[in-house]
Image 1 (tube, rainbow, N blue to C red):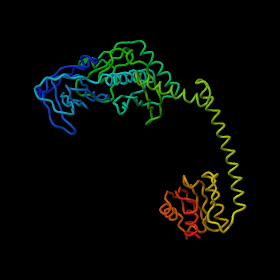
Image 2: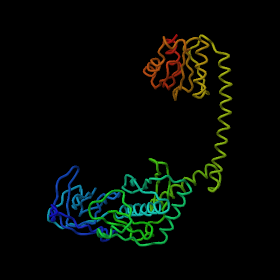
Image 3: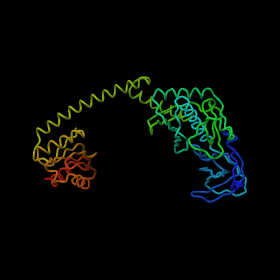
Image 4: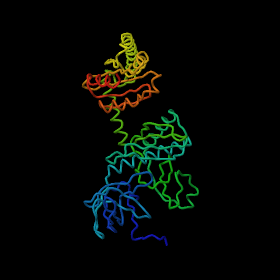
Length: 402
């Protein structure tokens, strides 16, 4: 005896035909669950979460199915409303969602199978990334060996060659004796009956999820990115419709950048390089102007003054000037840039010798409370932003630090 309640075991129609979208079934049980109800059917097309693939969603009659899980061969459909036990219901999965998941998952089989056969990399992790609409935007696959950019590009090319060959996918349950003679991929030790998925001559892997019938259904496979990860490499892949959506998004961005730079799309990189060079040149010119302005302010500084308002200074110039003027004055000095409408960015400093007897950090907190804003820093230098007018700021600084 298996110890299972056979009357509650669910026939898995999704294994008979991964492209089947509708079915009828008898409601075996319906129990109240968190945020809805938990329904068991005698058979189902709804795939429960497993094998790295998320569960299907859809409807049973007029009731929404929001999630599906399996335990001891019983598949539980989580619904938004109850269903009458013993009744016959018509179910339908969200096919667009299912097909995109199959494209992504089957594409991962091809990428992982080739990574193993070409480079000897073992897949040690797999994850699907869904958006709020339940559509898988990309997948990540983790391999236990590092790959460089050239190897990744070759992997991508070979994966697409496999797709274009349009080989058939075969799912089957070998006997224990047959398994002994087979070399297949599996990320974990499996104790129950093993379901193998054969991807032509590319891959043989233990997996419980539905897959496309032929590799051509996957469409294009695009490796978007890769990075070192736990001594190996993590690749980010999108397949089929998600690869097309990714291409469209990149094309739209390329068109916009091309328009802004007034260059052809094929010359974007050159245009951006030229723009960055111009930006660096402007930064150097701005630094020279700020340095000159700071020298002029320092030369004309009134040692009785606590604050200098200069809208043209950047953050680095404010910090440097505040530090120099604080030493020159022998006391606290504020440098402020901005206007009454948008607020003022500031830097304030005290001489090193005054740090032990004067809490500049406390001054930053007091300033934020009294004038609105935020700030902080070290015992000798603070920076922040305050939202008040010039006259109020001058009055506060003179009254508090004069």
